[in-house]
Length: 241
Image 1 (spheres, rainbow, N blue to C red):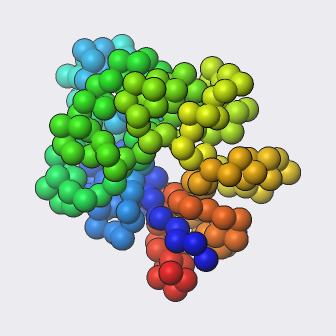
Image 2 (cartoon, rainbow, N blue to C red):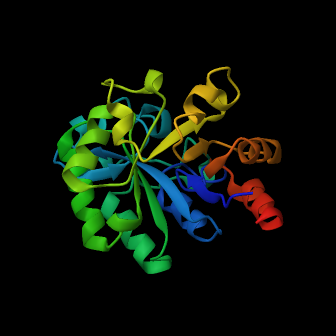
């Protein structure tokens, strides 16, 4: 079996509130080699970490991050909706995440999902990654083909896009700007999977949260496996590589 690289999804989001410092800290304590997170810009152009642009699902406030200043974002509670045990957990800035990695495990590799489809979001993220020494080892993920191309052409970044039907602003040549391709468990189990496997690009498969999921990903050629709960994934890899 070819070596598979394990990645935590939004930190260790099965057991901790997603995209928070407590979730990332827990992922840093595991044997994952990457963890993935999502970047938006605040109204005052600070990169912050949250999956959704709107804070409603995770924080209970129906406002978009692009329309909130950093001070307003820092008033959000990113933990209570997950569990009262995490009440008061804050939405982190990208810099706070990078400082945590520097303090705890500076060799951790980063899966940087650009959710804000403005080139400025990519520019600010790249600058910060270079400042902290992570640019050369990170992946950039995005569901927007224009941003994937921008990252590749302007910065020579290592990029991962997704199957064309999942992408925004996809063009006929967009696959040419992917280094890797992201494959969800739903796509993996569908009749269209062979089309994307035939692209010949390393496949990041997500989210494999059970041993059966991990075994299926391994059989079908995963180069990277992302998990909300990385424990079954790590247990599998200990036995097989």
